[in-house]
Amino acid sequence: MRKAQPFINGCWINSGRPVVQVRSPYSGEIIGEQLLSTKEDVENALSSAFQAKKEIAGIPVYERANILKKASSLLDSRKETFAKFISEELGKPLKNTLDEVSRSVETLEQSAEEAKRLIGETIPGSASQRGTKALAMTFRVPVGVVAAITPFNAPLNLICHKIGPAFAAGNSVVLKPAPQTPLIAAELLKLLLEVGFPKHGINMVLGGAEVGQQIVQDDRVNVISFTGGVAASRNICDLAGMKKVLLELGGNAATIVHEDADLKRAAALCALTGYSNSGQSCISVQRIYVHETVVEPFTKLFKEKVEQLKVGDPLSPDTDIGCLVDERAAERVMNWIKEAVQSGAELITGGKQHGATVEPTVLLNPPKQSKVVCEEVFGPIVSIIPYCTIEEAIAETNNSSFGLQAGLFTNRMDVIYQAAKELEVGGVVINGTSNFRLDHWPYGGVKNSGIGREGPRYAIQEMTEMKMIVFQDPY
Ligand code: NAD
Image 1 (cartoon, rainbow, N blue to C red):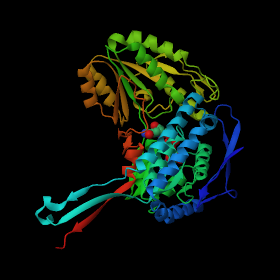
Image 2: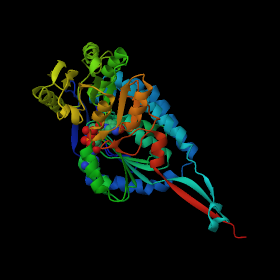
Image 3: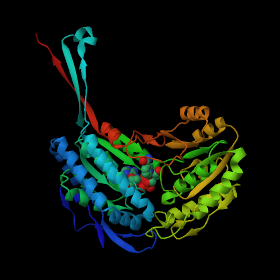
Image 4: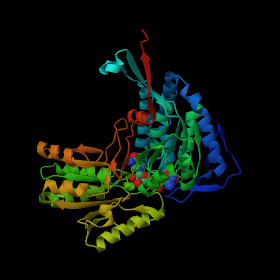
């Protein structure tokens, strides 16, 4: 049986804490257990991280980079095992978890590479009358302690996106993984320690919101790097006080299929990326705005592709759709489908629940105010919504409290320029869907989708301060 324990001040906590069983959401079987952290554990973790600041900042960059590189290689050699672990714990199909582990390997490797690019600049003073005999140099220095709080849906890669850059930058970390996926977090931590990650460079505490709240309130933390939902992020901002807060939040991502689009390609990509991990991705294709002249053929092609997706056991290599994180999530998704259909949407396919699994569901024309349009579904529902002009499609995409990424299928340069300029999102994908991310790119959103950008190079900027040293010529 696998076990997740708090890791505090360089030691695993083995007993004397409340124990919670971890079950596979697909089979219901017990696959492990986690020991929840007490208030005292969190206090000790914060104190340990604070004390380790100097030690971690003092590790030469080449050594930090080597450790991250070794972690990346070891993870690569254990790809299948890690993928299986995530599939068991989350119900995410092996196809997706193999991809997640490969991405995590890259995230760690890129963090190692970026560690070596912590550079500054020299700025002559003579641009000012008062500075003719002065010169400034800037350096990137670690912030100190980074709090890393992560969600369940990509439970390995999103931890790598925080620990990798934080350590590359020379910070110590307090990690709080999602309560639904503690086992994979513990597995990664063991791997890091195996390759020589300094044992005081990371503390891990386990539990839910209350553990996160204790961390974010504490003034020994310098930067909070949070990935999760809007409700939690608002609470974090209320509690954080003067700390820098980086927020990677959700969305109700739109993809536009224009009249000249390659409909086959658009339908295939929307089906692939609208339902991966049962739609539990912050950039999952949720709303497809389709030009009214091609709605009929697109809907037919899309339905065909969606019905080809294989629903089943996440551990089976040919499964495309596993289950949601738990049965409660599946019930919520079913209620949203019902609400949309009752208010006028046409159910094209899907709409059935089996345990924590919801069949990939396509809705046509749900009303603007329905939850499946204006809130984050985080489940396997995709809606097709016809539009008349590109201006209307852009306005409807922007008619959202979120703005993470958007997709656009067209070859018309005028449409591409207009959409790229006017869409209120962190990234626009041309001839692809909203759900495309490479881990070295700057990733993040506007509005309720977040603050700041992730991706090792950009996260390192956020997790370091600029320090200036000034030289005055005394002669
Ligand atoms: P969540 O917000 O419920 O929880 C995320 C983490 O925050 C968990 O570890 C949780 O225990 C902790 N937490 C919850 N409330 C907290 C509080 N008040 N103070 C401190 N910590 C708190 O999110 P979730 O259900 O695990 O994940 C789904 C959400 O994450 C979706 O909205 C999804 O879009 C978003 N997400 C965003 C990205 C991105 O990069 N933008 C990536 C993946 C997921």
